[in-house]
Length: 211
Image 1 (cartoon, helix red, strand yellow):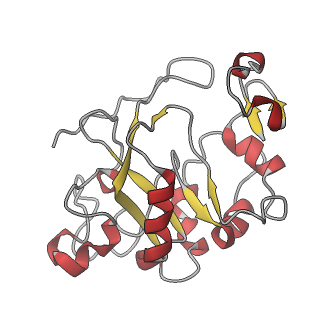
Image 2 (cartoon, rainbow, N blue to C red):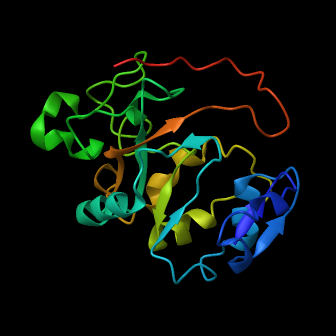
Image 3 (tube, rainbow, N blue to C red):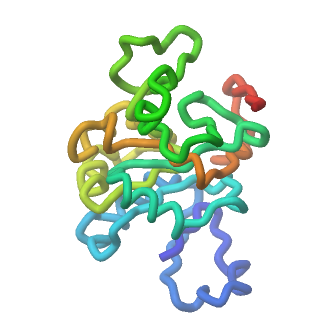
């Protein structure tokens, strides 16, 4: 099933799978609107994982098979790939790729001082909750079947950006969010932050982070 928020359907004809999927076209809606109406947990129950991603992501360095292999091995119920800091707009340092690790929540095993990120004084040694630890951003979340059944009920019918939902996802982690929620570093993406939803954003621009 392919969702089209821009009303453009025929331009996908070049893809071999075009005629094998259901196309749903509703202009000026967001992924959350489509997910709430068409991705009910019972509808997608045959799938083990749900990728609910924005369209402005670069995936040239991302391999879904390797990614899911890590997610299964580490028991992550909610996860996301890390962001390439040299090419991405980064809003939260916890999502920045660290090349020496592949799952951020496992850093404690190798280097305890790097268990958490410190961002503008918002996170410190006593931080135990999001967005300092056990947290993923809303641009590229990946849910297990069980986590999605919980998260779907948190989605309001009129969600646009879903800001704030990320702070609540820990309740859907099927256990300790610091263990069940994590960022995978070895499979990373680029957040291009292209203007969508009708035009340029008036929000302050996030900075690029260099390695």
